[in-house]
Length: 69
Image (cartoon, rainbow, N blue to C red):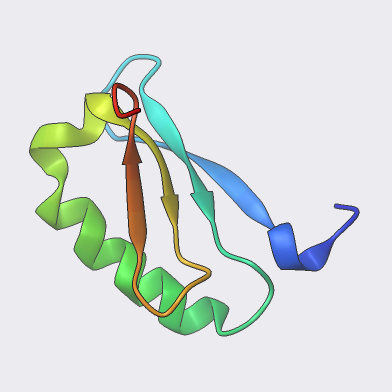
């Protein structure tokens, strides 16, 4: 990782073949961000296949869908 502010990881989803998305966390408050991520994953379970990334670096989380422009 060259820049801790842009830290991210790829999340593979349970029971889904080749399905996952990027999670952008940054370097601060990782524990709180993992709690937020847990809630978002539960809420967005119907859209898992359409998620490109979740960005947790900002005050409000951002979910970018694959087909959004």
